[in-house]
Length: 128
Image (cartoon, rainbow, N blue to C red; front, side):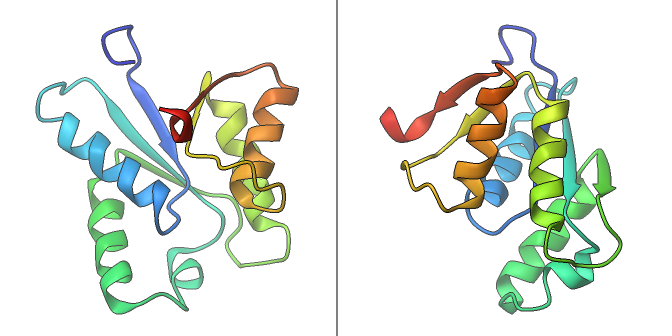
């Protein structure tokens, strides 16, 4: 995607896939200094990470510091803040790069469906 001109990469700051992608973007910035990592968080970092392990919190802190921008959708956690974050990610993106196993009741599934409704391109790496 970088070779095709992509310069802005958006991620939601969740444990797992999000953090892996964020780390890859940070690593790629060494070779491609023009690319940017934008974190879109559902709520404050403190509330988002409240139940995380210490190692996940430490990694999140590293990624937070390395991000070019950080946007917080809601200062406090509430029932719909993850959906709000997912919608914001879709709204800002041209392409939805995901690792989606088809599970309907998941944040990834929700985000993929949002992207599909908006006609966004999708790259599902579960199929590669």
